[in-house]
Image 1 (cartoon, rainbow, N blue to C red):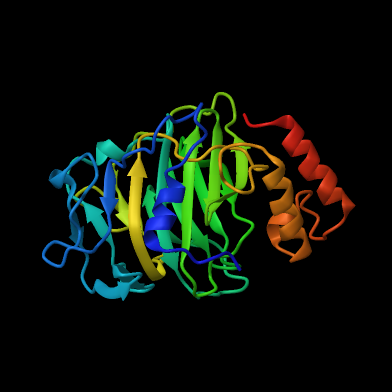
Image 2: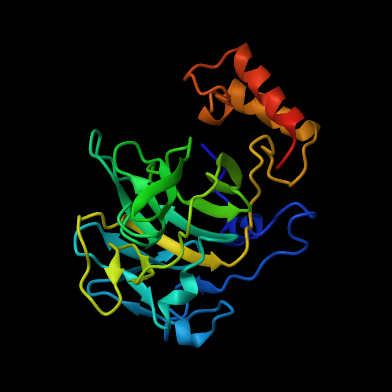
Length: 297
């Protein structure tokens, strides 16, 4: 199981990129840490207090990692929504990132779809983007859509439904989508040429709840999050790199990535299954070597 780090360590790790890609840690445009008892959805991001959040009915706060977090029951369409103009989050045509710390033990084998962590669309029905935790196996899903159709998406190797805190970070970085769990890039896919605009929709940003039209009612199906969400962040830059071979997450390809791969392989960690065949063999070493030799995009 990945090391469970403190909240500060998780956030610091998320804000690191290779020096050639991002010279210094980025500041989020939206950041809810839920720790201010007088205003738990105060936005400490650069968009300021105009984007403080509004709470749906039934929201519950719980002590978490030295502060507080939000609990969602998976039924009531509870959600946190920023005030301010929703157009500020129509970001998917350029570099952007979303991140959160989640805890869930939800397991619904055989059930389709996922439970929303943060989204600005109803997945697959509007231009926009969404991050979910898949019902069937607990994998994190990140997708952007264009022209009302699912255009490109990623799934994590590591399931996050083990009841432990996991930091999940997703980004559009240039022509790639990237997804990381606990500081390790687990998936990266090129964005198809000619994808078209993915940015504009009239949905509000929703944390923990279904897609919601501006000023309107929520839309089905019932895919609300079940569990705890903390430290929600949205950036207008990419904070992770599409470099799967950078297993130690330091932004460089070095001998330490080989050592980390060996450790993952020896412990049977799914992240060592580099050829994706569900087995741990010499071919995973060869696939990792090829990814390492190819370098970072």
